[in-house]
Image (cartoon, one colour):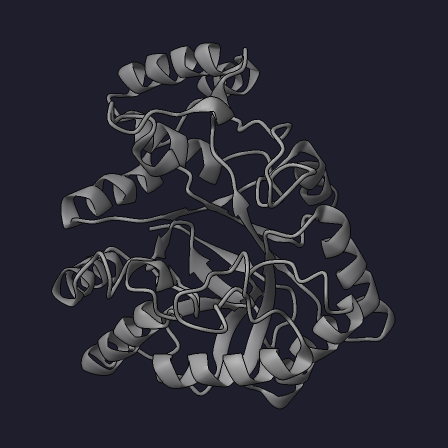
Length: 328
């Protein structure tokens, strides 16, 4: 396994593995025994960075979520896991009532919600301190200052370490960080967005996002990361939910543009040269990119997880990286 640091403050910075394990479906689609087997294998391989949310996975049984955090809490207790494994969770998207969702009825990011939801996550996870807490989705109804101050209060109290943000517009991230910096408060240091080798279109309006998808690492966000190397980036759904390799998981209209075919051609060629799988090349490309990413992978079996873990040791040559970067 390889590792990198996230965060800059010695009091809260963490050394984490360069491959993160997503626990979104633990306790719902992925039963507890399988989840425990995946977690055990990940830690055995040196993995130290696990991702969840207080909203996972409400949509399976019309709940408010929390199933994933509870499974992780039971696993931590049964295995004696302490601070050596960084478990990151998120708040803000938890439905306020069963049978609703984050689009129509989210808890939001008010100061009161941040406090009560963080306390509930700590209880489910069995942790006195959350090492990394994200603002999961944007909340246009709450002033950014209130959100910034709400998160900062938990850091000051010692119940939260690092702060992260996901699925916000880049201007919102910058504005929130500017508020924190001006007031001498801890700000967002870890960003979590969708990113992969194939680039998703960002020009397709959505009824819920008329300006396009705000959870995708657009050129604007990548440029922002390039200018601030102190920020860390976690890339979710890097393998496109099987889209690179499974015929039953077509890429869909989000990838219908002129860059997709040549990038797939380059990806296939590099995989053949290295003897690695296409998925492993994608993960290696992300880990060693000019803007280094921490891929966040899911797995439904230990064999699937092992494929992703092996990508950490895959070293692409500079020529291969250049070919991948310039394709399309």
